[in-house]
Length: 181
Picture (cartoon, rainbow, N blue to C red):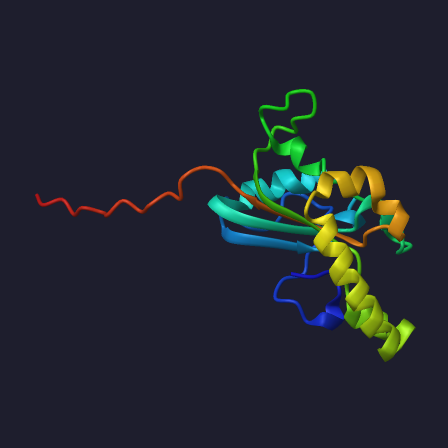
């Protein structure tokens, strides 16, 4: 699914319009790659994803970290490592009403290198990838410390990747018994 007709998507839909044209529990996996930061109401989007994702399904969300969140003119917001707390029922002050379990969270300093090559050139891209590998390793030892203490010391992080699982058992189909009369 995409919003750009030029990408020839299988399905074209404005993600700010609800409900999405899918049945409940339609997908086993949903991946949002740099989309949520462009949308008007991220919590409404997460509620809709909860509706269309099967129990036990995986949700992958990639968004800009707040330290570099506004590098694109259309970004509405940047995100922080606290975003998953909104989907934890044991965190009542912020609980959004939608429950997702966080499987992993990662920060990335030099994201989307396929776009950067157009701007920085081949050699600089190579150097920045190396620096990014080192910074990512340290940042992901403790994403909380990086996000709250030292992310700005290195110019900010470009990407935050969160992997969620929708809790609950995957419903099994009950075999249909034919009745004999």
